[in-house]
Amino acid sequence: MPEAMVWFLERASGGDVLVLRCSGSDAYNDYLYSELGVDVNRVETIRCNNPNSANEPYILDRIAEAEAVWLAGGNQHDYVQFWKDTPIEDALHALVNGRGGSIGGISAGLAVLGFGYFAASNGTVYSGSALNDSYNEDMDVRYGDFLRLPFMNTVITDSHYDDPDRKGRHVAFLSRLVTDHGIAALGIGCNEYTAVCIGEDGFAHCYGEYPQYQEQVYFLRPTCLDVPAPDCQQGIPLDWGFEGGALHVYVVDATESGNRGLDLNDWSTGIGGDWENWWVEDGELMISEMSEEPECSVSLVNSVIDFTELEMEFIEIKNLSGGDFSIRLPISTSITISDMSGRIIQNLGEMCAGEHFVRGLNSAGCIIVNAKNSELQSVVYCD
Image (cartoon, rainbow, N blue to C red; front, top):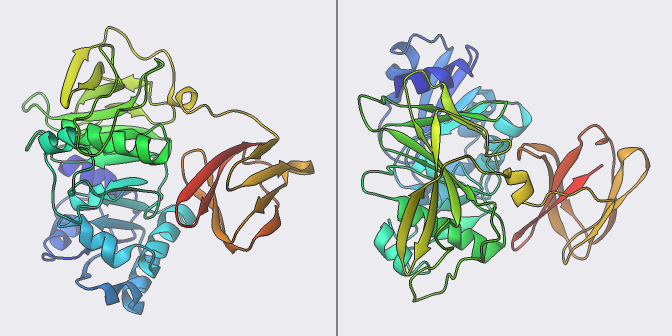
């Protein structure tokens, strides 16, 4: 969608745009630099076709100088195996979470933008097989160990939604996140020729050519009902929810103006869309219309509560005076602190076992403390 790419380029504010990919050509260069009517200083494409590229000083310098990075299509497993836990991952976090730069992607590039992602280590997976066995060998679904970007906490994306129909496999992805990680998983799915542009205010603008074409964007979130966890087991068809839904889904007809979409601060307030109920019975995705918008926001679904002391298996947090707090860790682990949108506001790095004092966050309000060791654990702290 050219209108969406214009939106993306405008966030570069006349600076440098970098295209990263693991295969393909430099065809984006002329398109982004001269064909969309947005002035930028430079557009460059770098192809990272082996794991050693993640340590190349030239590539890291270009990311450090960029105001916007675009992740091209291809095979997302290349991005995962070449970039995860490398200086390129750190540089992309510094771009977005540190400098406030922009990042976007198409197809494989879109697939890795959520905290949850389909890594495709064994190739693609289709809706039928994903719903029939959500733990089949092709269902390589991961969470929290790669990119951590604003407004993408607990989100898993999917693209090419209508070519072929990927609604079912996307629901299976969410069921895995709920089952494996105990989170209230969210999803953003895009039809073949649509785009979602998430602004700093958290509103997701949906671009497409509706009504000339049936181009929709789908936002998947938990219902407000006390729905049982998915019956998601290896070797048996998925069951999740009942008539009335396991998921509320906001379906937006995407237009060239991009003025329709959903507010990702609450996943409830939308413009120009319609709500549906989705659930799964014996491996079959079921859909029904909703007559009104959800009665609860995602913040309520996620049970974000105010507290002064929280003990978990992994983290103990204690409130101190002046907005300071301490973190007690039973083992060494890496700690980052995010705001409620998921934007990293402080990277504390590797911390040894024991008690550590954190200062200067009294104006942050509610924050997310993320501990990453063999797996990711996060807790919400409200001053």
